[in-house]
Length: 324
Figure 1 (tube, helix red, strand yellow):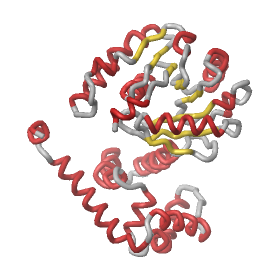
Figure 2: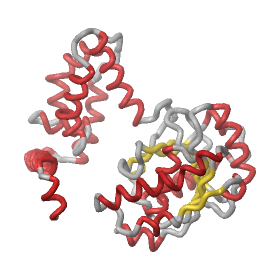
Figure 3: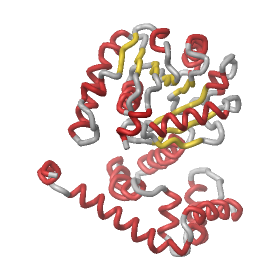
Figure 4: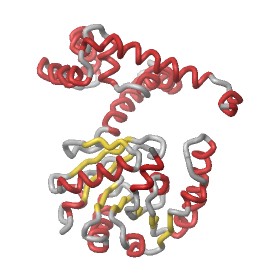
């Protein structure tokens, strides 16, 4: 599949910002066969980027996650000392500058002026929406957020967050590009700070901090519950599917049985976001469209076998893995 992606992928990519996310994006696109121009205004960052790229590629290769020699993939990434040189010919620009709205506003003014008029301008912003820094641009219709998990070469999800002014064709081009590069794009349907990834992560972190503050648990206790409990399940299925499969009768039954308890937990934190009958009905309808109740038993078996396989892999001695 990766070879097929590379055969189709010739679209030049410009990455603006050579920090950890910029180097990671360079790896993602180069591994998918794209020629990449990597730029950063800091000469020290540009000098360090090739070594960092080689190190990450070598680690992927050692784990069997790179089907080409490191040098072959790394050769697709060029270092551009000037912004204009990086943008020349690029049809997708991935901005990876620090999370400061004024910096992004000034940078996107330059990107809009210098990049090819047909190029998509995507920001790796973790929380800032495009409306906050690109609303006044002449070419604002080609701007959107493309926020990755970190590191994107291991976490394939990428959140695509258009602004109200983003053209539908811009979103479609980005979806096609990231999908062909092996990513899993998720369309965020409204501009909210933090998007999906950091809102979900933030909800867990807020509660984790409170549990430590209140003396309920230590930092290690919280991490262990996530690592050895919730995280293992969530590596295979998300929170909605988890509770759907945890309760016979599905997610509507779970909401009936556990909703009041979750409401009380939220009230302890000053939250008033009840699972109304209308909301539960909407979530239930979406889950049943994905998994009819007559397939519930089979999916529970699949979940358990998936967890068993992950546990078996984790328990496998290192020499067995090497032999394989």
